Image (cartoon, rainbow, N blue to C red; front, side, top):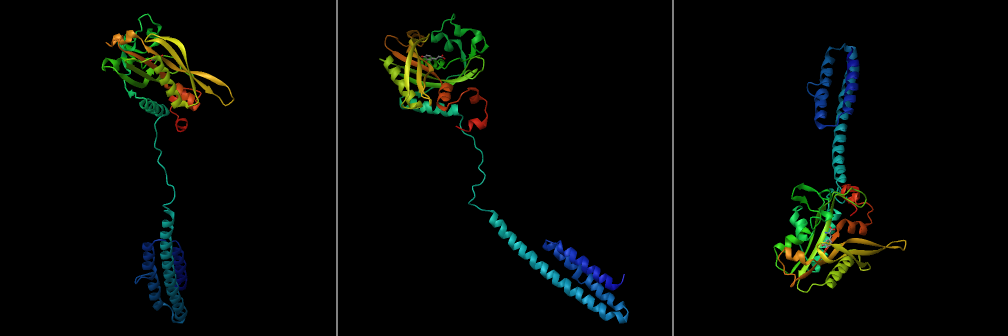
Length: 335
Ligand code: DAH
């Protein structure tokens, strides 16, 4: 290969290599390889001496042009890299727009049932009720016996309850907390007790093997049915809105006498109305007071037990109780 060919080859290779360089370190390697004191340009220059005399002027010119061309290309590329670096910095700054909204972490929130329990507690607190809790694993004394529910009562059928072992069961109602509170308190007693209850019901749109109730109990001297009706009516108006109407239907529960069921009248968009049952209530049966050593001649009281899912489903127009327990966040996120 002649020196002239070499010079052209060096120029082509150097130019091509330079085009791909985007790092200062690689650019320096390139400079040493081609323009360094032991570089290819230098060695081409040195080979000039061996060239035939008549070719020397042309070769010398070509070698010089190579040196000038590569030096210029090097300087130009260096400036280009610098500019790109500076521009790049500007671009990164522009990307960091601190006024953009950013990624909000998805933090959860209380389940609609829990939110409702809090709201119920708040409404009742305004009427002077304290919040009480009882265990979900209960004995028959608190779930049945002290509540005046005889052995023969259908509610005590083992097939209608979740027994863990003889004598221990998952509570089927929050009325158990009435007994637990009265056992440890001297009247007056004014409590509500929200919580889970369990019954082996077949699951469908309105039934679940586990649901929530809120129990209410007020025992003092001179408590009457008028207090019960006023309290529940006020409670329903506070939760559902001042326009709702309530009605009390005679009923029977072993632990209250007289007993009633409380219904709330809802107005629908199409103009129709419907009474919805919220739960049971009544005046505490003297047998219950006696079971906790309260003097029934001195004290009277009222009690109520409302279904929390019913309230939630009515207020939020939820057609199926299963939505509340299936933990689909797309549904739960609405509340
Ligand atoms: N414990 C009853 C039930 O689960 C509801 C109930 C009715 C509670 C009347 C009461 C009451 O406190 O007075 O069906």
